[in-house]
Image (cartoon, rainbow, N blue to C red; front, side, top):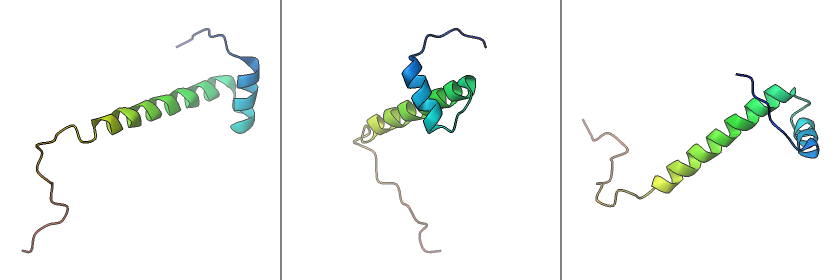
Length: 64
């Protein structure tokens, strides 16, 4: 999908330096992936402990 965006030139240059000179489209793709990963991890962390009545889940099989 083509999209027109306005970016801060200094921020873009700094990101390109840190990422080994990726092209703009590749850099934006990686930035979006990182954002999705970070927000997904945050949402998962927020769910931690949200089931107070849940019984502990056994981590190992019992003896046969």
